[in-house]
Image 1 (cartoon, one colour):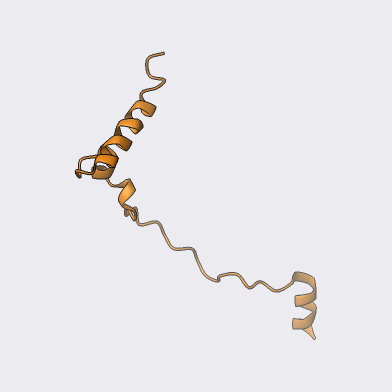
Image 2 (cartoon, one colour):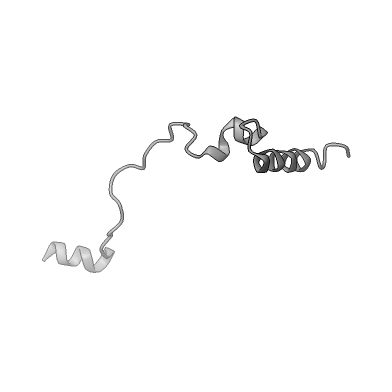
Length: 63
């Protein structure tokens, strides 16, 4: 009866148990690698995106 009362009061948690995985600091996507950010890997679209990123980063530096 004690377990039943506990469920009534607290409900049932179907979530994931245990600790969350620790952040290892590894880059998991190509988009975050330095080559892709700077457009150095040869793709024209990546170079264009890098140009836009640089423009956005420098947008408020002159004020």
